[in-house]
Image (cartoon, rainbow, N blue to C red; front, side, top):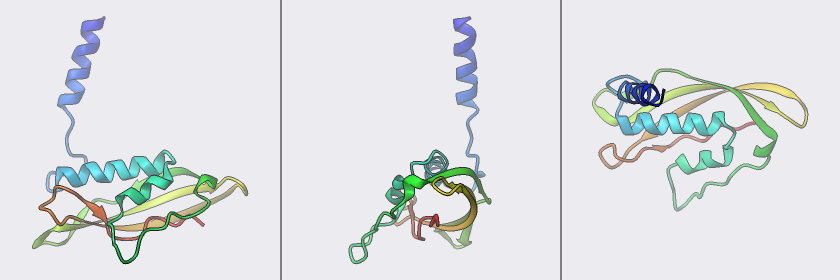
Length: 133
């Protein structure tokens, strides 16, 4: 039984591919998946860790995020903004959520632009994080 479990684990880990497509840089794909998981699992304060840092305009974490429960996250295919520039990509996410104190169900559309300034090693969100209101 233990050998069978090891074989299945090795098979599944060997079959992992870039779920966003072969043209999407693997580091960007990893960031997109991590951002999605962060939002989907309710670690909303951590969304701000993905935002590109700007010394002149520091990021302020929104209040009331503990009152939000994300119920669904669906994303569009990732695409380059400019075919000549591989450092900027865009994706749109549709996020369903509930404001738990009022039991209000809402949906928002989050247009994301991801950018790398170091040949694709690190990717940052250059658009605002979703605003749950």
